[in-house]
Every structure is written in structure tokens, then in C-alpha cells.
Image 1 (cartoon, rainbow, N blue to C red):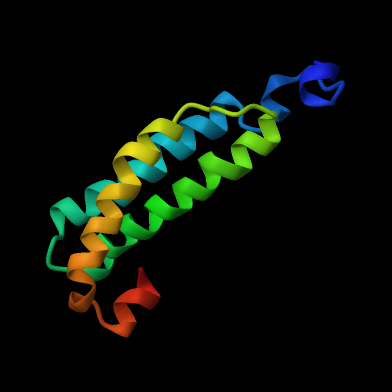
Image 2: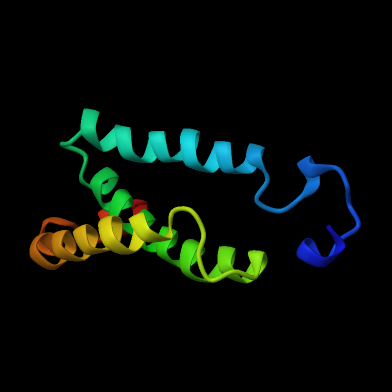
Length: 107
């Protein structure tokens, strides 16, 4: 543990990116962010929040997780690069005029 995490902490619940934090981030937060726009498609800032979240995912999986884990790949990087970001870029490039300044602020 000292070599991999640069820590002598043996309690896995205190490690960065432990199972509990991954469960919260991947399950509950993502379900809320992705399901709300499906059930409320008439609220534009909710769909915009999904697109903004995709770029936050890109930053987290491409930079922050890789730097903290000291690895070049982590779970979620491929789906972010191949799925979320291209769809978000396409959607925003074609439909950016649908959003007002308030939608951008709330998103």
C-alpha cells in the first residue's frame, strides 16, 4: 500500500476512489443526472446539465483519476472518450441556440 497509494493507511474506506465513493458517483449521482432529463424533457437546463456533466467526466477520467492513481487508464475513460463527449459535442454544436443564458447558468 505504501508503494501504490503513497500511504500507510490500511482502512480501505479512507482511500481515494474507494468502492463507496465510486458507488455514489457512478450510481446515484449519474442516475439523477441522466434520468431527470428523460422524465422531464421540457426543462432545457436538465438536458444541458447532461452535456456539461460529460465534459466534467472527461476532466475527471482523463486527468484527475489518472493522476491520483498514477496510471494511464481507468474504468470509464473509454466510455467518456467514445460515447459521452462525442455525443455532447454533436448535440451542443447543432442545438446550442435552444438554450438561454438562464439555462446555461442552471445547467
